[in-house]
Amino acid sequence: MGTAKDIFDTMINRFDPIAASEMDAIFQFELDDAEPYFVTISDGSAVAEQGEHDDATVTLGMDTATLSEVMTGELDGMQAFMQGRIRADGDIMLATKLTQIFPV
Image 1 (cartoon, rainbow, N blue to C red):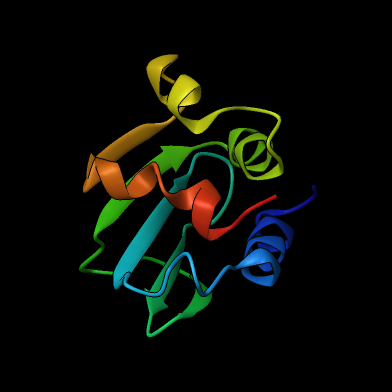
Image 2: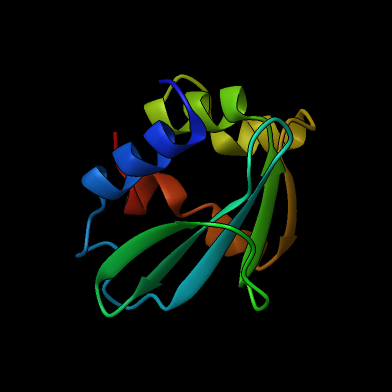
């Protein structure tokens, strides 16, 4: 899928505002091999920005390959978490909704 920026651009393009209509959250992505990004979901919109947010709802740590595989549907996010490929801190249940908010 390319660089971290490419992955987040693709995610934003796939954003489903109906699935996220009741959501108000900040997903922080701590990438092992790239700059950190955070995605803000509010009022039925999603914005990805490079950097670290000081008040993330959930923080997910992984490498870009894992993020790409989860966001393309090659890898189940829960399986990746159970295998230790994804680290999560904060509202972990919210993290399980990522593939609903950004469907393949």
